[in-house]
Amino acid sequence: MRALRAAGTAAIALLCAWALWQWCVVPLRIDLAKPVLKQKTETVVRARNSAGAVPLARETAARIEILLAEDPYDIDLLLLLATNLEAAGRIEDAMAVVQRALAVEPRPELHFAASMLYLQLGNLPAAIDSAEVAVRFKPVLVLQLSGELRNEVRRRLGMSPTKG
Image (cartoon, rainbow, N blue to C red; front, side, top):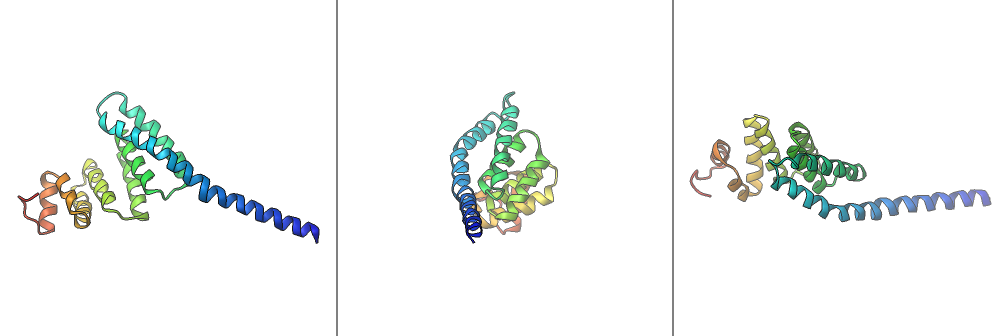
């Protein structure tokens, strides 16, 4: 009987340790890493055409992927990863990450990101569809569109083509 009680106590202790790790330590580690990763990503975006941007984007993406292994549903990390993959020239991979994020939480910003990636992939119809969804739920995003994409989204949503 004692052996059974000891085994039960050990199992409960292990379960508690696992829960503490999963629900306290992992989120804390991710939250502490996010500001640094955001800063590096902003540096990548600002230096997009410089020689150092691609290696920094690759390094930052690798760090983000490590954290995503612990929390694969963190939307902020997924957006940071997509931005770094795009900056590293991995547009298809960035699109896959944005699609993964959209499956978790369909935010307007994610639809907008998908639209921009579709443009880079040469898929204007899909870019228009994604931009339309983004602008429908967050109209201010129309100001970030340009050219044919902006005009078509405005037309579909019944917006005046000359108003901001």
